[in-house]
Length: 173
Image 1 (cartoon, helix red, strand yellow):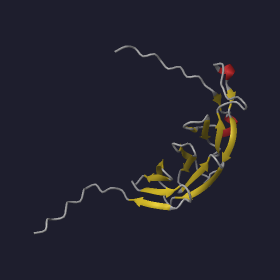
Image 2: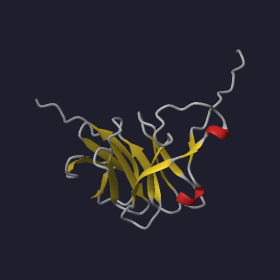
Image 3: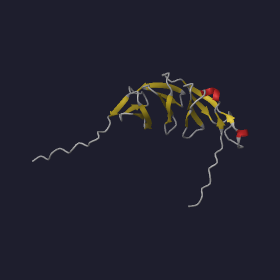
Image 4: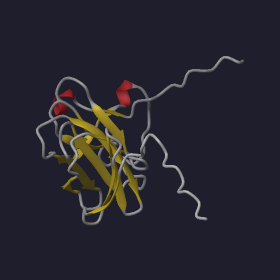
């Protein structure tokens, strides 16, 4: 097998440590735009542009050409606990966040630059996925609940699958 060449990554921008505080940093890159959602010990979610203001094209490389990110919006989640997940929808129109020990999912809309909270009534959220006009959350117990993006109403709840499949009914004589 031929040796592989290491991939060289060029940083485009950096986040100031004063924005998030010390400790772990959670980040999610927008799927198509030069935007990044991030959150740290401050528990405030920052939506930042990864291009300098007024510069639609990046030239140069290395630390000397790096610019500090420009914060375009901030989201203050409803719970005082740590944000544990940030997730963009595939279209990039929505950002979802949830916090430890909280049943609230915070949705931020890119077009409106507004956020809202939706109560999932489950405090053990472990994942979130977006679909066409909806989003689903999964719990540590295997329950999946689907909500409308439009109004946040619960559309369906899918219980965890049982360990044993049910046998087929007996044949009728």
